[in-house]
Length: 238
Image (cartoon, rainbow, N blue to C red; front, side, top):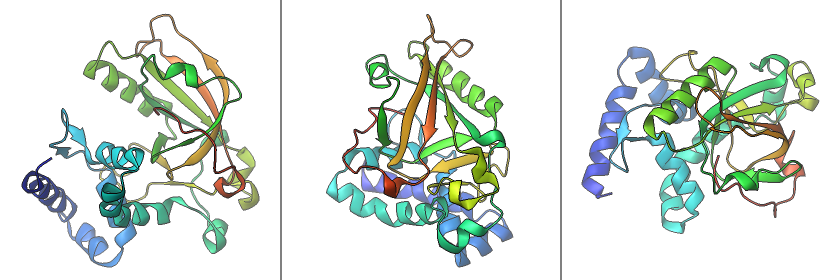
């Protein structure tokens, strides 16, 4: 992407961020929340066919390119400060998914599917957006299918320890509800920090894997990334 085009795209995002008084006050005083709001923008970036900023940022993380990561780290770090729940913040009354279950819908290429075998423990090389709402995940399944009908659809069902709702000992330490979103609470986004750890609980394959009958993959989210191996394999897609 040419630098001038990238700057123009970011100016459009800035204009969107400063569209209201509350957003301007937040942008001037709370960097992490502003970064989180940028993450949720649906402003299309001139990188690929109409890709959103969140997709471009995750590509930078996946690439692990030194130059790209140096440029991306300030916003990654800012978003991450709201994803990671430790210390005093772990005692706050934070939003938690009902029964400890959240959802994600999207596409998954057939070449990546064999990676997700029952019992596989891995890290996700990027932010992982999920939702408290299955309906929201199913809308993303439809969006993926409309973008590429040949790409198999997959519904991810992520399980957290339900005791974490009331007891911070069992609360997943690397995920949090996205409070500063362009869409308010409509997407009920629950965002995992980069390199979060998951274990494949079960896999339900579908013959056609359309948005109406997707593959379904159940995952168990680790309680604390710090307690997991740093040499785990990385998911080829998510």
